Image (cartoon, rainbow, N blue to C red; front, side, top):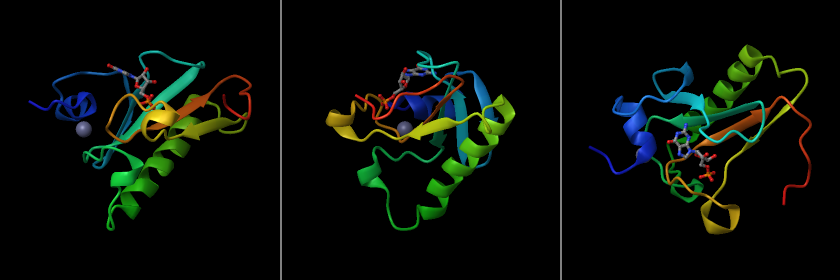
Length: 114
Ligand code: 5GP
Ligand code: ZN
């Protein structure tokens, strides 16, 4: 059993509300959504933060963005617009230390973020 919350979702020990899955990535609805659409896209491989992305992970990171595009189309926000965010460490407010791409949309989003 892993200590990592998102690894426990990948293993099937926990069952989030999955919206998209491939061999390499899993995407599920955020438990505390900040917009009508708020999905987290994670690599199935455990990578703690952006700082831990290694040479060889480039294609995997690209797959997170490809998944975001598929989900945006599936959820009907591709044309209206959406935002992808990946927080790293304390100043960005990272709470879960397994890489995740937030896909947020379905309402007008403010910029810059606070
Ligand atoms: P971070 O702040 O690390 O960028 O984002 C972590 C995200 O994970 C938050 O938006 C939070 O609501 C979400 N989250 C935390 N625990 C769970 C959980 O058990 N299930 C789901 N689906 N999302 C979670
Ligand atoms: Zn993990």
